[in-house]
Length: 58
Image (cartoon, rainbow, N blue to C red):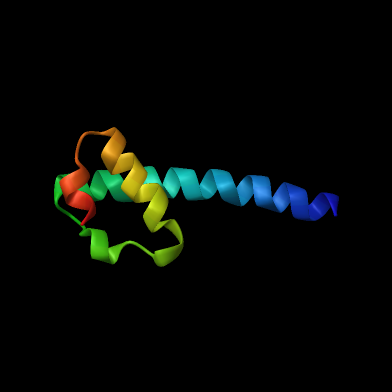
């Protein structure tokens, strides 16, 4: 049980970091929102909204 909790915490942090990476690549024009894996699309969308670029999350 403790192991599962540790894994959840670690993966949550990784997802947040990957969302920022994908958002950065989208802003620079290297990737499109369609290229983002489904499991982190909501986090990437939120990062883009926070950066005043919601139009890139379509």
